[in-house]
Image 1: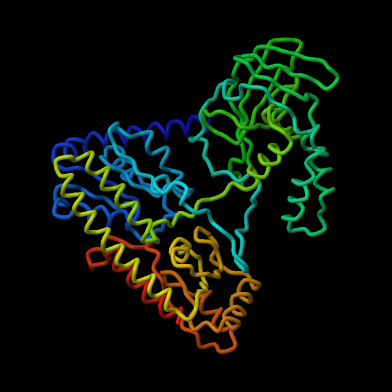
Image 2: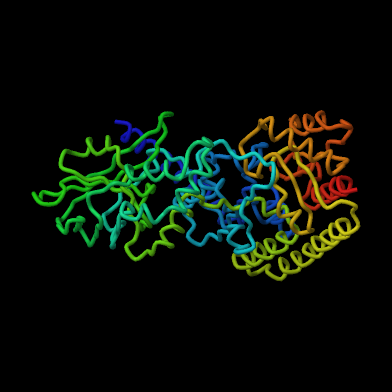
Length: 499
């Protein structure tokens, strides 16, 4: 019944979106170009590049109510605007996980889509933990985006095609991985041997190798027995966690053969059609329900992998690196991104490409000039380190000018309460470095920064704010706020913090 309800809601949303797109289509296509930008910097850059031509273009900033990138969820109206726009600009990090589904509903097949992280390519940075920084309080193991049943799609056996081998026979060769797990465990009594025994149970599987070819699955057992059969798809089953949220989806296949296992479930942490890189498999003859209660979690990887490659696979599976999304806080990045926006704008409106080219050249000169001011400031500063009693979204900026930093949390952290250890570390470091200021980001609550100051010896450091532009609204734009004005104010705050 729940599945029917979810499907109904999904169809209803799609219908609303299509109707909305149909109503907007004539106005958008016949009168003005439509550009949708998720955040303020993108919105401001577009308007700078448009210049006097802005009156011929409808530019929308989606995050316009003070909600930052990490908390935003699109409304039906937002999806409708994206569906029919001529250009869509978004950051492309983990916070934008909703974009993929939004673009599935796009009616404009000529839409230009700009993913800022993709534009930057290898120069995009991953989030980093520096000394004293508090880690997120969540499980880093098998961390996957939260999904609802409405997100789940049927899959075919071809997603799992290929030759696969069980990790169970390789347990004794994977000591480096188990040692790593023990080192990361909060329970310091847990050892490498503890993990080896845990996975000797968890990864146990009667089959050493499995091959999937077309509709056929072949099971090869350690004693030399092999069983093959054709399987047909039998839907999926959901496994939930203690909070009632979807933990995993198992895709089910069954056979009429009396030789091979009758019931098989695959789980590769996916919920839509895609080629599997590894999977957990459950099989037997007592029905799918009994497989859901299995205490084992057999792990299979591609047969061609060497032991070292298996280790890399496991380490990568444990630590999927998150990109630092705050790319706009680098003036050098801004130059690259504005050029990409101008190039795409010229393609959808070639009649005015010379204007866009001239406008972006003028704007890039302003960005470059401010970049030089930052360089002069950093070179002339007494200090080369800042300390944030807050999240730290400014890694791109400080890296540009050789400035070190300490902070309470990474830039994309959802944490709002710092631990005693984090507070104590930051206060001690403020004393040790004789820092005149503790920095924080925009927002009314600067409690962490104030507490850090209160626990220093002098207790007289200024609390200064740097604006990461994650809460800028159209009201701020009307009051004259621009990307350049914010970055100029950030320069002033940084100058004071470093002197």
